[in-house]
Length: 318
Figure 1 (spheres, rainbow, N blue to C red):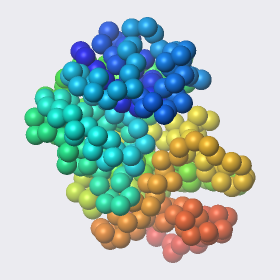
Figure 2 (cartoon, helix red, strand yellow):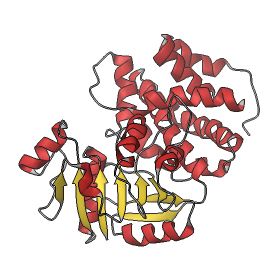
Figure 3 (tube, rainbow, N blue to C red):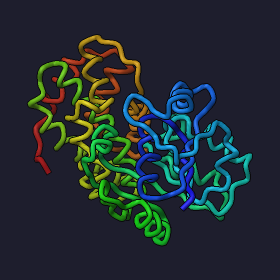
C-alpha cells in the first residue's frame, strides 16, 4: 500500500518506521523549516529512531498526492491550517488517518469533524488512537490500539493493513467517544504530573477512577457511548499518560509544579480549554478538568485547587 505520513515529529516518524516494516511504500513529509526534517534529510534519524533508506523523505506537500492513505500526525491545533493547504491539491479517493489527540479550541470540534469540512466527498476519514510511546515500540514492546471511522469497510482495510507484531488493533465503534476520550486523557495526564510534583502520586488511582467517570459523562452528553471512556482511547491509555516517564503531559504537569522549564508539546494544555467550553455547552460538570484549567489559565494555587476536589460534597461513587 502506498502511504504518506504528514508530520515528522516523534509519533509521525514512529508511524513511518512501523508501517515501512510491514512492507508498505512510505513517504514522510515535513516542512522545510522543521528541525526534525532537516536532521532526517541529513542523517535519516532523530533522537529516538533511524529511518531506513526505503522511506522517501520530502518537504513538498505535492509529493503525497499519489498516496492511497495519508496519515496525519501534527499538533492538533494546526490541523485546520494543514487542511487549507491540502485543499489546494484537489485530493480525491484518499483515506485520511488522524494520529493525533485533541479538540479544536475555537470551535470545540473533534479532529475528524474538521477534516470532513475540507476532504472531498470521495475521501474517508479515520482515527488511529490508543496507548504507546515511541521509545517502547522502537524497542519492540507491543501494545493495543484502536482504529475508528464511519465506514466499516475503511476500518477493516486499515486494521488489516496496519496490524503487525507490535500493534494489535481493535475496531472502534464510536467516533465521538473515542476522539473525546483520547483528547481528554492528556488533561488527566497533566493532573497526574501535578500530583507527582506535589509528592502525592498515591492519589493517581483516585484520579484515574474519577477522571474516567467525568469524561464518560461528557461523552454521553455529546451523543457518544460512555463506555468508550473505559476503552483503549481513554482509560486504556492511562498507563502511558498518567505513569510513564515518556509522557509529555505528565511531565508538563510535574514541571509546572516544580517550576522547571518545558520545551515540548503537551496537548492537554490546549485540550483542557476546549473541554471547559464543551462542559458549558452540554451542561456537564467536569471537576478535574475545571481544576486543571483554573491552575493553568487562571493562576489558581495548584495545591489548594487540587485539594479542593477532596472537599466537594459527599456523594455516591456511581
